[in-house]
Length: 133
Image (cartoon, rainbow, N blue to C red):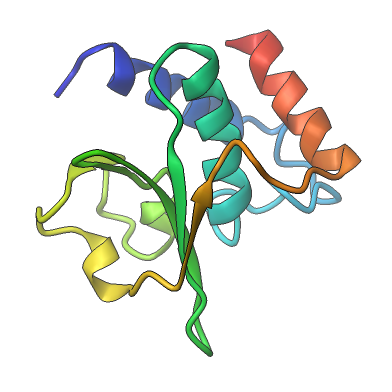
């Protein structure tokens, strides 16, 4: 898989790793990818929707003692922060059923990623990513 979807995901991820996005006081991207799965996924989903790649679901495991979020649409999974759990992961798009990190997590919550509660800081990050894509 090396088409336009993967290229866009890689560009967004590169922006999220940029030091300007990772300012320590940025609660959404300050330690990317660690602890940024929900914010990163929601921002990525908005960029994907902006670029006609669909309206992705945000899927989360909120099991006591752990949590993780990723995106799903049809038979695809995008986990832009998968490497926070396994630094050897070097891709972000998976097919459902493929051996993948999400098998360690159970879905406890699902919603359209583009329909979230946005605080000012999250809107600022999204605006910064949109202007730099």
